Image 1 (cartoon, one colour):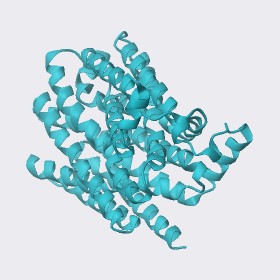
Image 2 (tube, rainbow, N blue to C red; image 1 turned 180 degrees about the vertical axis):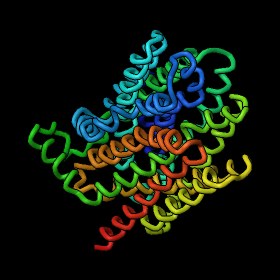
Image 3 (cartoon, rainbow, N blue to C red; image 1 turned 120 degrees about the vertical axis):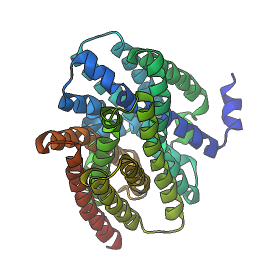
Image 4 (tube, rainbow, N blue to C red; image 1 turned 30 degrees about the horizontal axis):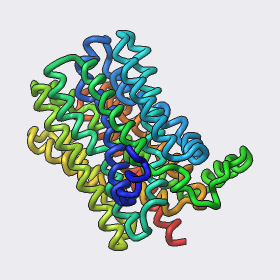
Length: 404
C-alpha cells in the first residue's frame, strides 16, 4: 500500500474519526472485565472488594504515569506513542490468557492500562493539530464518546461471546481486533513530522521537559479540570462496573445483564455529543458541569437510596449516565483550550487523564466499601453522591477562574 496516496486521500476530519475508532478499540480492553467479572470471581476466588480492585487495576498506570506519558508522547511523537500503546495492549491481553494466577492477572491489567493510556492520551492534542478551531469542540464531543461507545460494544458482544466460550477466548478475540487496528493506524495516522509544528519539531531537552511539567502543574485551571474528571470518573466507573454483577445477583441472565448495562453505558454518548454541540453554541462549560453533577447525584439517590422497582432504577441510571456524559466532553474541551501554553497541551491532557484514571481506580472499591460497611447495594448512593458534591464545588472553582 502506498502510504503517500493513502494520506493524501484521507482528510483531517476522516483521520480524526479514525482516531475515535482507535479509542473505541482501546476502551474495549478497559471494560471487557465487567461482563466477565462473575466468571473471574468464581475461578480466582475473589472477594467483592478484590473484584473492585480487579476492575480498577487497569487504571494503575494511568493514575501514576499520565503526565509522564503525556511528555513521552510529546517527545517521541503522537503516532509512535499510539502504535507502541496498541502493541502493549495486544501483548498484555495475550499474556493474561496464559495464567490462572490472580496476581499476574492484576499485573497484566495494570500494564494493559499503560498501553491504553499511550493510545488515548495523545489523541486530543493530535486532533487539535489536525482540525480547525471551529471544528474542535464538536470533535472533542465525539472523542468524549469513545469510552461509553466501547463499553456498549464490549458489554453486548462480550456478554454474547461469554455464552460461547470462556473469558480467555474474549481476551484473545480483542487482541486480534487491536492487532488489526494497529496495522491500520500505521497507514492512516499521519507521520509525526507532518503534524508537529516546525517551531516544536526539535526534540525537547530534559530541562525543557521539566519546565513543561512545572508549567502544567502550576496551572490551577488544569488542576480543577483534572479533579472534576477524577470525581466524575469515580462515579461512572463505580456504578457501571458493578451493574452486571448487581443485575445477575437479582437473577437476571448474563446476556440480559450485559444488554441493560450496555444501554446505560450507551446513554453516556448522548451527553458527550450534546456537550460538543452546546459548547460550539457558546454555552458556558461550568454550567454543563453543574448540570451533569446535580443530575448524577439525584439519579443515584433514586436508583439506590429509594425502594423503587427495577424498571425505575434502570431508567434512573440511564439518566445518570446520559446527562453525566456532559462532563467528560467538557473536560476534554477545557484541557486542550486552557493548557498553559501550546507546548503543554499534551501534558495537560495527560494530567487530566491521570486524574480520570485515579477516579476510575478508586471509584469501584469506594462503592464496594460503602456497600460492605453499610450493608447492601441500597447504600451505593453514599459514595456516588459524595463524589458529585465535590465535583460541584470544583465546577464552581472553574467558573471563578474562567471569569478572572
